[in-house]
Image 1: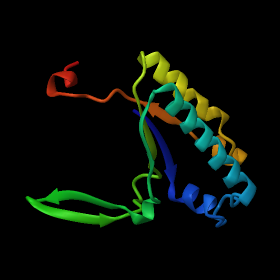
Image 2: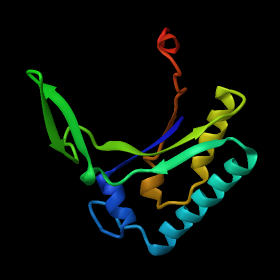
Image 3: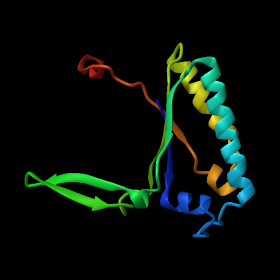
Image 4: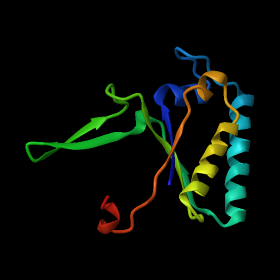
Length: 135
């Protein structure tokens, strides 16, 4: 699984809202969209794409925990963290190294310099059973 991250500030910038950082231009947002469409199509055509989804902004998130055995719901975004999961790709490929090669392509994604400077992705295997969790 390839995971990408963003903050509420990133989502606001992509929506054209200025925060502490400049808003994305329509051209920058369109270039990112075109890159993602081409990236997804390439993975689809190679047979490596299983699923991909982008996620809504953190402001539309609810975090559930528990306190004294009772559920506790907190609306996002959360002061204790800046970045949250922004989207994911599930790929089925020949190796962990190949999944890493695929994720490395995100460095080619057009974005404003301030967004590119903090962008990253994680590559993590998906476990199929409890035994997969054994170290």
